Amino acid sequence: MSAATGRAPAAVRERAADGLDRAARLLPPFPAPGPRTGEERERAERELDAGRARRTAFLDRHAEELYDRITAGRTLRPRLDALVEGAASAVPNLVPTAAQLRAERALPVAERLGYEIDLGVLLRGVLRGPAAGGHLMDSMLRPTGRALELLGEFRATGVVRMDSTRLERRAGVARITMCAGDRLNAEDEQQVDDMETAVDLALLDEGCEIGLIRGGEMTHPRYAGRRVFSAGINLKRLHAGEITLVGFLLRRELGYLRKLLLGLRTDDASWHYPFTDMPWVAAVDGFAIGGGMQLLLAVDHVLAASDAYLSLPAAQEGIVPGAADFRLPAVTGPRLARQIILGGRRVRASDPEARTLVDQVVDPADLDRAVERALELLRDPAVTANRRMVNLALEPADGFRAYLAEFAVQQALRIRAADVLGKAGRFTARPSG
Image 1 (tube, rainbow, N blue to C red):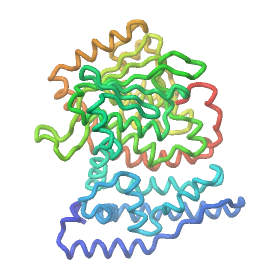
Image 2: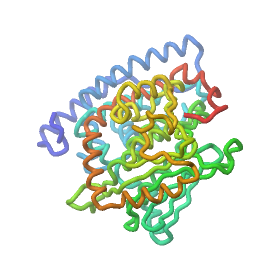
Image 3: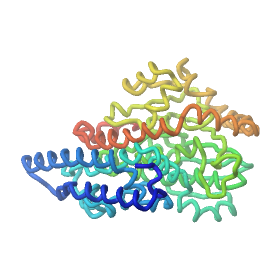
């Protein structure tokens, strides 16, 4: 079947639709969510496993046609959540319905059947398709509705304050401050939404020439009054089943992190370049753990206080560290990347190995001044053109698409794995990852 199914001759489209519908009728229904005894649960899990194999085979053959049906021949641009809803409507029993997802999320984590895995199977199938996956990734680079609603306010005032993030425009610099002070900027779905909104606004506002991301002062008793960059994923919410595949784990990678690298896709983009972009600087106070370290891999210039450290303890926590497995080896080399990802090695800013991760290491008392100097340096007009070419060379779209396709299932499996669920509370006594 042609990748351009939506523009194929009518007879070809009809045959594709017939084949999709015939195959869809063979998909088994989902076991209803609810508590089960040991034997009942084992039976339900066997049914789910067999069903996921059949859904994978269905998507291997029909993902492009399905995506074209949901998007009206790729004329619509649904984001991840809307795509899942569209798939549930277009093909019964391909993914759980919204009602089934709500019913499962109302259960204790230990009693859930892991419907997130079925969403991962769908999104893997879509992302594997060059046409469908490329279109979805492009759609996720569009500005969010929330950002468009706040754009007038930001243009007028130069300030937007959100629950976990503050954005200020001063002298052409979009200053994003992560300010979830009670939880050390540990990430949850609210912070992902706030960060994507802030990045969108910075890129949409004509008065912003360069961006800065930094952690604010904490109210957490262990770090009260001190700046902290990020403690990574909010482990309490992860173990409570409140970190979702679609709303957090995939949205984060396809949303604001990739927008930092490439920029925004807008309808009025110039023929010069299809994205609205600008350079980004990050300044690390205290630590950049897990998702905080992942964020550093998406910006152009990193400064760190000499007493700061970086780490990716996701493997110790039982999960995959986002796109760090894809990006980090190119930055540090494969051996150090394995030590950091697989072994949980902590890299201090003062270590020689940190030179591959941090551009400038400065005394904490001098960090403010160093940040301002770096911002001036990266305002050179040639920086934007060169960062585009560097990022395109380091992260080809098809390679990233293939990585995210497999990540969709592997991460969904990990967040439901027994060893992860059994670690609830183990990491809450220290900064999370």
